[in-house]
Each structure stands twice: as C-alpha cells, then as structure tokens.
Amino acid sequence: MTTRRRADGTTVVDVRGSLDASTVDGLRTALRDTLHADRPRLMIVDLMFVTFMDSIGIALLVAGHESAREQGTRLVLRNPSEFVHRQLRIVGLAALFGLPSDVNTHSYRP
Image (cartoon, rainbow, N blue to C red):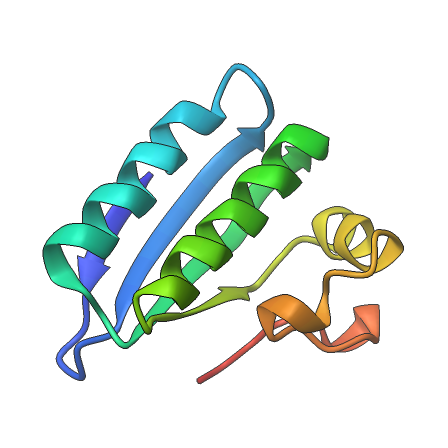
C-alpha cells in the first residue's frame, strides 16, 4: 500500500492484495493517519490491485468514509476490480463511494 499527495491536494491511497481480517489494519492506519495529518479535501482509495474483499474490508471502507465525512473530506473509490465492484453493488454501497452502478464502467476519474 502506498499513499501519495497530488499537486491539487488530493490524497491517493493505492491498495494491493486482499482486504480482509488479516490485512485491514494497514489500510485503517493509513486512512486514519492521512486524514488527521493531511486533512485532504478529496481522498481516493485506488483498488485496482485488490483481488479479494470480504465484509471486514467493506466495513473498513464504510468506517473510513464516515471518518472522512466527519472532517469534511470526500472519500471515493477508484478502479475496483470487477469482483470488488460487484461486492459493493450487492450490498448497496457503490454509489456511496462514487462508483457507477454498471460494472462495465467501474472506474472513477475525478
């Protein structure tokens, strides 16, 4: 996982691998630390290389979204794999994260 700040002030968190009980702590820490230290207006979580996500990963993304919202940051997801996008659509959360409802247009470009 890497975190970078773009010239426009947007923070991008690139996530790789799986988001499940054994891996979410790293993302949780990155989101929390970045939100508190940088206070970006927009935070993008890029999921292009996430191969698996279970309910623990989904719960973390929802909690991160809420934490961001509370401090005035907009958190969106970008480039989810078809599997991840489908998981978010099934539980009714795609729109919350700025994702289209159609799996064929699953990337977000701010």
